[in-house]
Image (cartoon, rainbow over all chains, first blue to last red; front, side, top):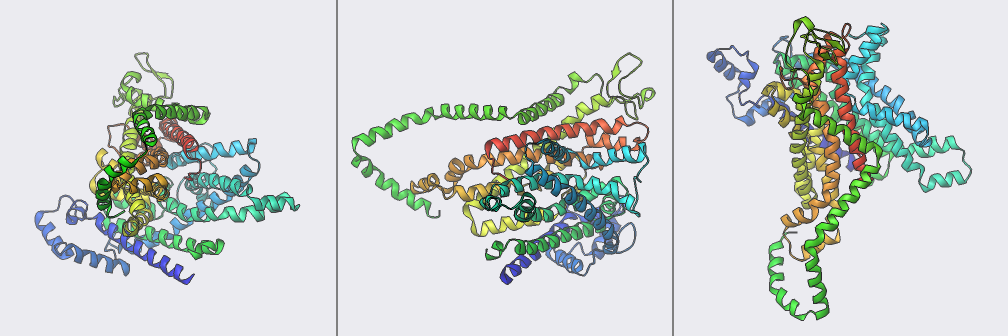
Length: 305
Length: 329
């Protein structure tokens, strides 16, 4: 167990190192970071001076080492536009993004697990068909279109919910549904197929033969085992949610990291972009580390590997 | 696996001796087998027909395929089908609701946008960048992932470790964020979008192919090919690749749906194919501003994405269930 955890931790650190390199490399895609960071009308002299002060003339490895050392201390440089440290700007926006992603995950789990279970237990009934079709539609619907349609119906037509900003619980409803829909569809389908598989196992038949009534069989015997793949996908889906927040936050003017980074890209404010990509990726890696640890408790077989 | 050349050399030496010692009956059987080999194209074709029949029996998959084909026809035949030029502006006819007629008496079936452009024509032409990015990006990531999966699964060891850690790193990024950061630096254009999506989507392919190769590697026909002295490259290409192709195809189909959504998300954010080329995402972004007065601007391009992606997903699901029901994707 301890060896497994140590290995898993080392793996996560290695991934983070790789992430840091790619984030660092973003600025070098065109070959000259000075031209990317400076406004297009900067004079050749300014560019030269900027290169010197930023150390862009040093060997590549030295520059990466400097970037990595900075990143570890939370120093990604100053935001070009706001004049503040990029790290602080991103960290300030983190709670809003976590709130939205968390709410979306709650919506997804709250809808998907019951829907998936009912679908599996009442297989090939009307309930099953409806939930399958809705899940399929949800998986095929682009987030941004759903967001716009929800605004059209609930904000413009019926004036029930606010279409932008953050604050009260009402502000959270539409963005959370928008962001959570794709994940809801995924988890519904996964729960359904997982439950169907578990329900056909011998030990379920044994439990039924012993006279255990339906609800405990479903909730105690079956769900516990069907939960394992769901827990894994929750970790992976968090990546989808953090990435999807870029679009959802833009539509609903939600003041999170996603919206900040889209604006930063438009403004060519790359220190902020680097900090945002690095911090969101790190969050994802850490959450998956936690998920893997939880996983070993749910399924002790994993520890032996 | 290694030292395949020496094994081959040895078998070449022993080959004549063995042939001579064979009893006539077996030899006859072998020649008979050899003559039937060219004819195996026929059973293969029969298998194809069988597969198509099984696929056609799945109503939803067939429906999905028809939808996808209609979208392809719309993209290719846009100039013939559309009554208007998708970029032709007409300020007097701006924001007309669906079904309204212009001064010449032609109908704007889906209405016009804020510049008086025909939405029907723009939706039809918008299928072009969507499908183009979809096919091209899937081709890039599919080939990359296939190669990684083959090498990783077949050779294992250090190569496998390196590739799988790379996959972890790739997956750690919120995809859209990384894509817009890179496209923001390189500047949005069709090739850049295709390459960025293509290069960063290889992981699913690699994992599925690797899984298939791991089990194929131990199968008798691969062992037999080894024993007969085939080189690794030949075994990979002739024996393993054809058998790992099915799961790959399923992944490619379903991934196409994802890529089309990403393409439209990028153009929605203004980082996709640039105007005046009509894109579904770009139309949505335009229509968003007029959401309270002209609902049709944002509704129809969104429906186009939904229908296309739904069609691909239905077809992909059917393909998976027909070819490889145990594949969990």
